[in-house]
Length: 307
Image (cartoon, rainbow, N blue to C red):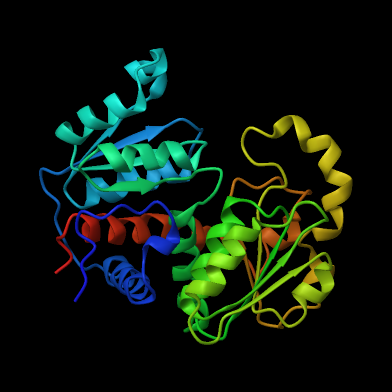
């Protein structure tokens, strides 16, 4: 039997299909009131990018587990004055029990993993957002009672969320459809990696046609059209992405019981309408809450106390 204790989770594919299922099952039990303790353990949060849900959900999760959190704001620590990532990682590994890093380059995350002898969690990079996908899968499982043979359509920019969704879908045997404008498709290496990892039932569709992608889908998912650090591109992107807006018209092509997800923050009136995000199909707020439960399950698994 494999264990996640002391492992790094730099991407969703660092988990096997069985390990991913186990984390989701544990998250369900924790959400239902199962009690586990990481008393006297310390989680560090080193975030180079702005955060609301990730920062708060990790902090509350650790608090409820009986552990402590240190917020390592880069502007208040020596990394903000040029201390090398290698030196920072070596030192933090001697103080902390586990570290979540939100940064730009996946390579920087790998540096921490290579030099800090504690579990490193990807709290978001430009390449992947695995913790978000844990919450997404938990939300889908709760609402549709399954993950295999579920069609999930993602509309918008082929970004880090799309990448982790493709990989997570491959491990769970889901049908993933990605609808983007030309030039904004997901990284082809991610798509090929997903095909290599895929379990039975996985299918992948990359298309420029939002209606084709949405047809009979059980889940519609979107994200902002400009990720953090790309805000200067927002005005030029809007005309390209307008056909991919999740609105009432698009919902009519999906399954009649479709659920709608958005990882937040939302730009209402751009990638999603007010009517949809506040409507009967929306599961956006459950999805946001599930960040905490999924990350709680991940923390106790990596610290080896999930029994």
